[in-house]
Image (cartoon, rainbow, N blue to C red; front, side, top):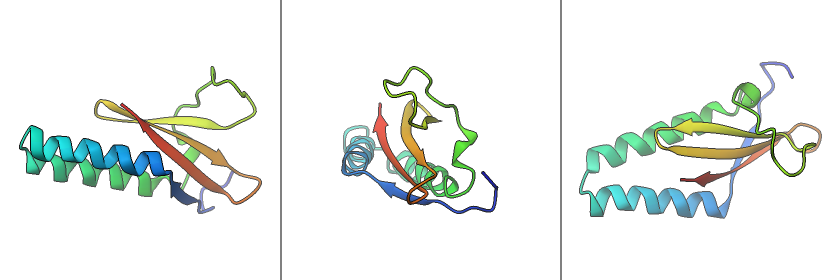
Length: 98
């Protein structure tokens, strides 16, 4: 993989819902709007950075299907699980696991 190859990041429905739930929790239950903004911005920046060199994060080797390129990105106490697809649409799919 070359470093100038750009990938398309495609969030799953689950990811969007979990991110919304996490930020709502910060904002309404903990009442920390600054924390909410900072967390959301951090996640957005990390996800955007996956457009280039998405294979730089740790591969999950114990995944059921070893042929799939499943990786994890850690942000605070959360893990983003995503798949790098090189041969079809050069895209990423990801989801949150808290």
